[in-house]
Image: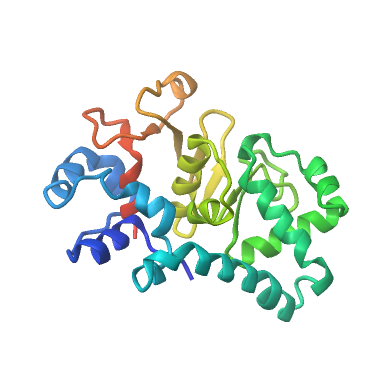
Length: 252
């Protein structure tokens, strides 16, 4: 089951009703949509809380225990769910937890599968199976490449934790760029086809190219790419091809 979108989190936190939009609607009308939404809340006021605590609805039951409970969910998924489904042997569960920890401290684009396989002391083939099982278990997102002939699950181009809350469960220090990309992927992956791009960060539905970054990010990497957009960490923009990152939390 998918976790809360940023929109759903805001609805629960603020007791308001907010519209959701298709990707095409956001790309075509994001300036107007931003103006409409910001009549009800400040876009960035609650974003860090969502990134840290807001992906799973049980946060609202007992906020002070959220990360401890999420850690228990992660352990149960690996120790019980994946084992009972026959996706991993009980004796290997600690290797999956170690693998998640390694991913949480790595830049997605720098992750070396051969090196990681050595660190968790498994073969490359076994590592690929682990990655697939963690994806099925809702703990990992595997983002493949647009290059033809490369299978998403046999040779992943980028590996992300399923959502940003898991970083804080591990208590790891992660670069802000990794957090941004993880948020973007978590909000789009179950609705659209997301792939790694040679130019820019992601291609969605083999049509739109996105470069994700801070508020000062420029178009350099995608300046010659058709249907390309900057996704930047800001409250609003006045450029039709610059879209606030938080707004992708309103896709569902």
